[in-house]
Amino acid sequence: MPRSVLSLDGDVCGPLRFEIGAEDGTWIAAVDLGTLPADTLCVPSLILGRCVPRRYRMRATWEGGGALELVTITLDADTVPAAQWPQGDHGQVGPPQRRAQAGIDCFETVDTLTGCRLHIEIESGSTPPQVDLAVSLRPRLLRAIPDDGSEAATLAVPGFSQMSCADDIARQICSPVSVAMVLAALGIPRDLEQFAYASRHPQHRLFGIWPANLAAAWHAGASGVIRTFDSAAQAARVLTAGYPIIASIRFEAGDLIDAPLPRTGGHLVVLRGLGRDRVTVNDPAGADGSEVVREYDRSAFLRAWLGDRGVGYLLWPRQDIAP
View 1 (tube, rainbow, N blue to C red):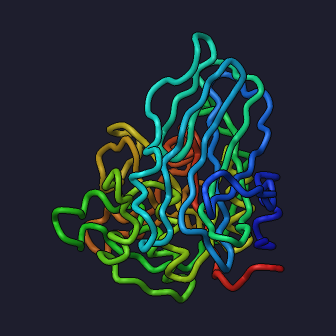
View 2 (cartoon, rainbow, N blue to C red):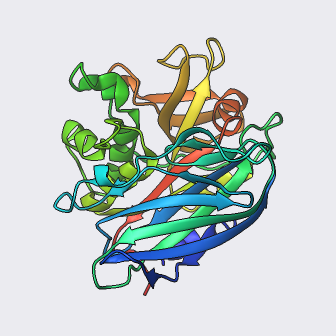
């Protein structure tokens, strides 16, 4: 278990207890989530250790017969193609007044759901998988952003531009390029385009599926977790502990002054520091490496990040894992 993650605001559930499934080499586990109010975002994240399974998928169920599948994540290219597993539901799923909505790598409740369970199915051969699970729960949208003024010194992270890559992928690879920046800060340099293709999900051909990026980071030499944040204080604690945050942001035209993108429905940047009035980020949408380091208005950035989902990735060297 990564010692550093144990202190992150109670998100980590810990090691999973698996039983052998009906399929040869498949192991199953389940976690009770209880009652989830309407408009709750659920972000589950497997924490990969020294050994990883071939592939895994997650499924949520709840009382009344509701169920949805999240996307399958393949970790071993030599196994049976993941297309033989469900690709993940999209849209509202469940009986009337008991619905949820899948978002490929997370889900959100439409109505209040009772008896929620998260099912994890892992292809791991004859050996029970040794992975941990983090589950973040928060409202999808925050109208008021908690900001107690907490500050954190700026961390050193090299700046890479996604726009320096081939034109046919440049505008799609903010997530893997952000991950590559943090890997470089850990002393794990990667070729940007090669790493981007290693992160692309084979079924959906997307570069931004969160657990697919963590899987690529694992192969590069880093473990990680996906979690949500809902306050500036949480972010400051993580930054002060020495971890840059790969933050998922959304904003409309005019909302984030000096950003290289005029607006976005989903973009990843590396949050490096929290000042009193400004935040320091590496924004991969900068035209070149010299344009990547940015300072944004603190309140505007926190709204763009924490106001909708507040998702962030954290990475650490793969060897930094306790027994």
